[in-house]
Image 1: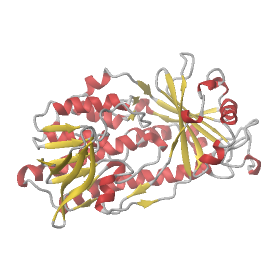
Image 2: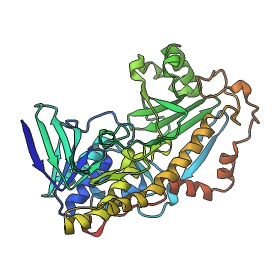
Image 3: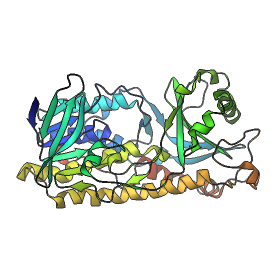
Image 4: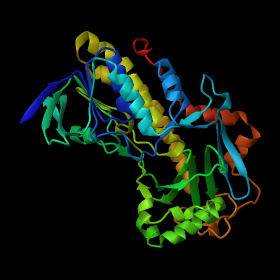
Length: 427
């Protein structure tokens, strides 16, 4: 038996973009339903960075004080450690506004905060365990979604004037609409794993670079969220060399991890992130809009994906809510306005990420050769011609003119086009 339901805005995906869009449309007084296929938000997210632009937005929404009570770490500078020195690449201490830092917050806490705020609005509904299986069509227009309750198995038909796909880079909504993104050929994947963090460890975040190696350590309070870059497609080959070889390489790269490296007990502790860099040519169809990773999958470089997705949601609500309130529908021209506004920030950041990929994975890095650290797929130290004691040109510029560190901080923590809460959503 098919259960028929109706709403004005159907949002597929309860991630940062979906929950922010749900909150804003509901605060506009528009009937809004968010469909989240999981029972809760307690999953192993890797994107837990909330940047200054999003922190400012939360203040505008009246959620800043509640956010401040969440367990979090704060990052006010970014550094990279080379074989022979440490260089600062971004200084957030002079960012404009009330927040001169990036907050490292468990994403499930952030999503619960948005869900609780949205639940206070009478026009908001959150359906959990709701897996979207297809799109409803009325003539040539998208008119809602089919979804299945993953607990009861019941099938539902949710009709909507506007459907928004926020279901990530593997978007089922995008596939059902027949929209295919352009891929930019990322040369790397990332291994993610956790290691315990001690009070005597460095605070915040750390990047570690050596020929053939790049690792990032993100401070989560009592543990480190660690990322290690490998060449795309090399995961199986490297695993065949054995976990002990990988542990030895990590200790050579970061000797202070030696007292806890045995916490990597098996390869199941090391998760592969298939890095993608993709963007749709067109983010919309009649009755349908795609935002966040569903429209533009980002690389993990800079940790900007959450904040771009949130900005997409804010722009969508600000530009589309007036039409929905007055006419009960949105036109293709309305949807195109959202893409026109959000396309160039996404394209600009993706271009920067592509440059970063090439810099990280170039075959002849201008860095000193690491001591006893054979590469595992990123480069070939034997082919390098390092100048010991010399920083690579980008880092040299950042140290010579510290103002550039503030520029870097603004690009990462605020971005090229920060969005602000519309007047009707402010509290």
